[in-house]
Image (cartoon, rainbow, N blue to C red; front, side):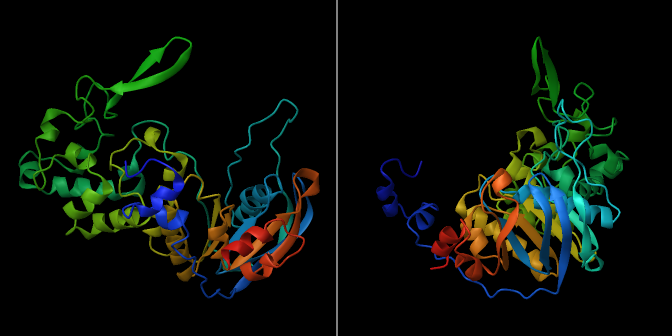
Length: 379
């Protein structure tokens, strides 16, 4: 613990990373706003409280969609935008809405794309859904770095002597994994009238592998010990392995250096899962102009982690992609290229574009409820 006491006393704690944000010691930078390379035009959008809305999203820019809760931000971005663009690109978008007793069919968005779709090659939704629902899924497997790690183990003299291939070091393949937990490291315990819980496997004690596989070492580490490394530790261990290092560096840069490579997906928060997905996208080679959509990505993040997230989102835009976020954090909105404020109220009192333009333009709007708060960040 760095400090416990009245807020004013934290100002004397130099080691605190919160201090500079709490006392506004870290100024908000006002970057030069990027000019759109085109416009994605949505016409006649109908969804929830959106009634025939016409909106234009700038391409090649970082756009923040703002508004009070219930104003229609998520209806526009996380539903209508995704569905219309996904349909135009021939990609089906999963509907996350829970069916109700009154609805026979899931709701869909109405409207059409008036132009700009030809400048988009891919659509990526970076949401907070889990990267997996069992302990078998983890950071290393989701990002793909574990494939490179298994090849390193298979190339060791000890592995070659035993005729082990990369599959021997996969906990999803029977030959190398623990036979009791089948590579999960945990066993499910059924509870009467309650959800099942997971407990460490009594045979491998969470190591996931059989003793023969664990006997193979790379740089003095077993495959289970590698999975036990944090991202920060792994950056040093794999410093000479470009195939692994690239993924690790992106994960560290986005603020996930504290996670273990083999940390089960069931232990990750929604915000961590979202950043892992973003890191996976950042390490991929560019495959054409992409539209990235994020809904409130800063929820639950420390301001330092918000800065790291902003840096990575800006890297995507600088690489020629388009980023659209639904956001309440005014520090993020102030550093975007374009702001679209939805409102003015919630429910039937919302669903309209109250103001749009650069952050400086929206901050001057008299009709926007967001403007006064945005203006404070631009002083």
